[in-house]
Image (cartoon, rainbow over the protein chains, first blue to last red):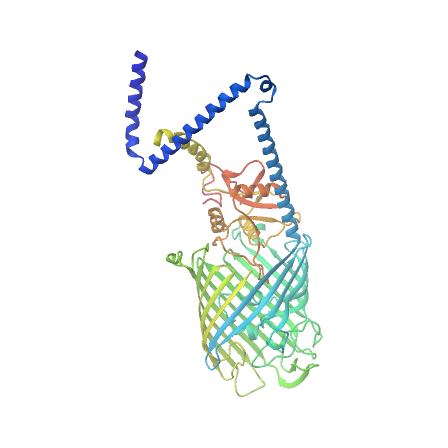
Length: 471
Length: 157
């Protein structure tokens, strides 16, 4: 009697204590219905278990059932076997993954990058230009050996003079024996290490479509030559730790290459003087190198030098280039200035004839030029739910502004003065992912004296749009 | 139902959160247990994840294990190490191909892979480290629980 009353009191107290919480979270009609459904399932399950229990009790009373293996034990055995099987599967899967990773590391990696341009410049027909597709192969047959190839299919067509105005060109094809981070010999067709732009000229990497005029005429990007040399870097900040500038890093590239030829024209600068891959028209090798200095994480300064001869009479051509890039949050500020000085007395070689012929034209005295460029990366959050932002992790807009200038002191047309070209480029691009970019830009060019007669820039203003991607 | 019915769940969650809270915000850089690497500098870690340093001191190629760009820990790691967005790509001079790493989807997957690959390096939440991998000190400091590393450990977020 007393026990019953005590139990009743406990129940009342329990409900009273729980009441505020229950009131605070009254279940909704849906939750009540769900709970009722769960209760009904539990009742069904209990009825089923009771039925099974009755059956088991009945079986226990028969002689055959007493000698048989009890069902629960058999199930436990089965479960253990399944767990062991699963563990073996996981182990085999991990071993397979490891093996695959090792094999992938040793295999050739194939990539492609592509760029197409639409331009509408003054006094010129608007046009689409299927600029190029580049195939890239990077192989690491072992830890120490590396081979890299970059082949450009320009304008997606047949070879030069074909119906599609295309050509195929090897931009890089070198082999490297990796010794350590400081010193790695490399042999083959390499990007000439003169200035930053030539090393980073790839369309999907650059924020603007058109190259600075300096990178066309003074540093003839894409500038690749056969050669042999060394690359490496030295983390001085880490080695001299404790004196500040922990991030101080030097990287270098030093090469002996075929070198520029004497096909140096007033209006095209060094563009046609890039070496051929088989012949060396002046039988003289050039020494070229770049020293990259990173005193801190977001600042890089590069110094490049070029020493060579441009003709068979030993006339010198020496070059110097300084480049820099500074990143502060969403801002980049970068620039480059290059200068080539040519010893007087040399005559231009015409590489377009076979064999190349010496002309009566005098080569320019010097070529110099540079550019300054600023980038600002931004994004508007309200675009996240639009086609521009949806499904992308970190889409970005970049506003870009460039000023560039070139001066070619040419003697061959004395009286008209040097060729001076100045240009402004205003650009905006959209990157849904870092390796895919859609660029829009407007260029304003201003030229003094002679027209720089080039295919891409000319003395024209206009709109340019392009798309580039690597995958 | 409600409070009384949920208390076991809440207790379990609390028990799980206690160690996590103690380690909250520390990213541990891990290597394989067989590795001789005990400590690296933050600058060295940056060079490894940018593809500039590709070998350990014994000449073996470093296998760089990364997290997917959508993960919060990668966002923190990239901000602290590279001062960059988690999708930032890094290029070596003269190469149009971004440096590639092995991407894993979770701390556990990262830890398991590093534990199996002798030359691997990865990063996980410090609370996820167990005895199958080795923590590497960054700038001479190892991650520590209970905010003991606050202000000195460079990978705290």
